[in-house]
Image 1 (spheres, rainbow, N blue to C red):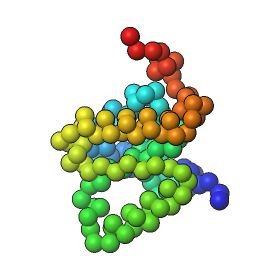
Image 2: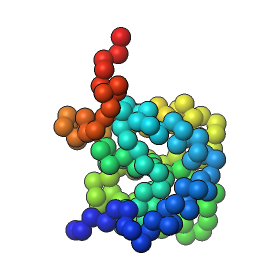
Image 3: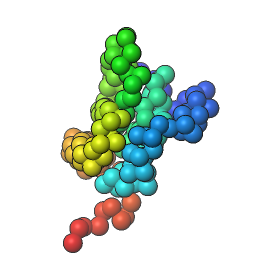
Image 4: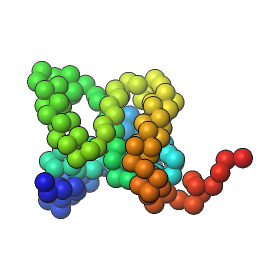
Length: 142
C-alpha cells in the first residue's frame, strides 16, 4: 500500500482549513502545539489519503478529530466509519471528541488525549515513543 500523507494537491485545502478553524479546534490546538503533550509533535489539518484529520502526531500514529454539528447529518456517520477504517488501516489510532466536550471539559479531553498518547508510546516501543521529543520533555520530573 502506498502511503499517501499530505499530498501536494491538497495543500491549499489544508491551508484554508487551518485559516478557518472552528473555536473548539483553536482551543485544543493551543494545548497541543509546541510539543506541549509529553513532548510529542502534533500537526493540524493533516491529510491521510483523501481525508483530512484535525490533529495528527506521526510519532504516535495518533489522530484527533473534533466533531461538530456536521457529523450528525444523515449519512455522515456512515461516511465517518469508512473514513476511520481507511485511516486505521495505516495503524493510526483515532480519538473523537465533540466540540461541546472541548468547550465544557477541556481538561478532561486533554487527560484522555494524554492517556492515549502514553498508551501509544508503550505500544510502539521506546525508540518510536522517544521519536523527536524535545530535551525539555525528556527531563525527569522533580
